[in-house]
Each structure stands twice: as C-alpha cells, then as structure tokens.
Image 1 (spheres, rainbow, N blue to C red):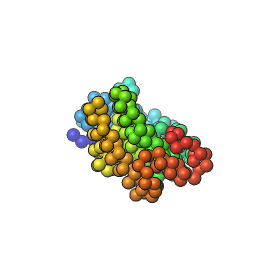
Image 2: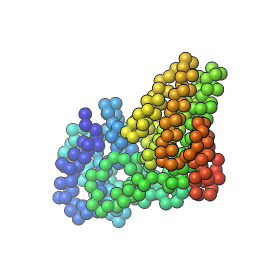
Image 3: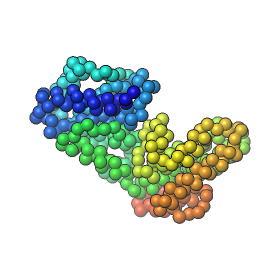
Image 4: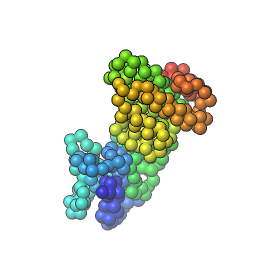
Length: 309
C-alpha cells in the first residue's frame, strides 16, 4: 500500500489546494503546507503495522507569525474539508500521538527543537535531542510560497557545527572501543550474558551514531535508526551489526569478537576516507583521541573524548 506521506500529498493537491485558492486567495502567497515531524509516515517508514494508530491522510499548514490570528479560521476550514471530502484513509488519533494542524512556522519549529529559526549557538545545538532535529527535516513540503518554512529547514539540513560533529564522533569511537572491543569479551568470559549483551548494544549504538555523523544526517527515534541507516551506510557494516543482534553470546563469543573487529575496520575506513584519522591502531580509543585533537573549540577539545554531549 502507498505510504501516508504520498497519500497526503495527493489529497492536498486534489482537494485542499483548490479549496485554499478559492477560500483564502489573500493568504496563499504566505502559506506553506506539508507533512513533517513526528510519525513513521513522515520518514516514509510506515507499513501495515503502522496502521493501528496515528496513521492516515493529513497535512500541516504553516503561516508567518504575523498571520497567527487566522489559525482558528483555517483550522475550521480544514475540519470542514476533511468532512466534506473524506480521505480513503483518514488519520487515526491516539492519546499520545502527534497532532497535525495549523501552526505558525516559528511555532512549529519551536515545538520540535525549541528555536523558531533554528539553533544559533553551540549550546543551542547541544540542547536539542538529535531525534527532534531528524523530525524537523523529514517528510515533504507540498507548498511554500513565502519560502520561510524552507529557509529554516535548509539551515537545519546543513547539520551540526563541525566541532560538535567531531566531538560526537570522538565519543562514538570511545564507546565502540569500550563496549565492543573491551568490555564485551570480559563480560562474556565471566558468563555474564546480560552485561555482554548490554556491551554489544552500546557498541552497536555507537557504530550507528558514527555512521550518521559521517553522513551528516540526524539520527531518528531509536527504533528507526538501523532502518534509516539501510538507506546510506555500507552493507558490510550493517550486515555485521545484524549478525551481532542475532548472535547467541554463550555459544559464539569468539565469532562475535571477530565481527566486532570487522565492523571497526569498516568504520575506520570511512574515517580515513574523509581524512579524519591517520592512526593505524586497531583499538578505537586512538581514533577517538585523534578526532578530539581536531576540535577547534577550546572547551570542547578539553573535554575527555569519552564525554558525551
């Protein structure tokens, strides 16, 4: 079945846009519309399992701040439109699901990332959960006649400031070393399969974080990170991560350790390809420290490589 994003765009073009032209011609030059934000459909990841809650046809309208007083009028228009032209798949709504409606441009971005025009300082960037940044740039813009919504979106798509990217890459490398190269084997040798599985989980999370940072792409909500990485990351690394997730620790600890090293070699190759490391060491603390040394921001560079921000 077609995803809700494509269905929503089709509905907007067929029903909403002609009605807007007729009812609000004076607003049309200032309007933006689309489906962006919280929900698997906004990432294009919705499937049959997604249909049980918060799924179906819907769209946002975004207005400049000066038109906030028109929001109730547009909300009433949208409710009427959905009633008179009911979609084949109307959006279902749950208690904790995302709300899709009429907002100002600044209000929408403020609700997701806390900053109506995007973060400006390093502290601003650090304060925003990465998954919220992913939600702020996903989905599709159906219409943006003023360009205001797109301007903030394009600014966010430029990605983290480089020093913050390097700091987070440094941390990822340290966690790969700690979880996968060091602690997994020790926990497995003790027969502590719970701790060993936790160490592997930390390692896998760190690998995926590094892949997104290298791609300059924000990580989505945790359950979609591996799925999203399938769109751009090397198959060898992702296949090996799937092997780790499926491995039985008590029976395959040595094989797992070899898979960990195979993944580390793959990530090291990507780091070298971008010119971020020169070390030939195999233990990833060396990679983390070399990345930390590249940070220009004094306070960030002074933080321990393993320190997470």
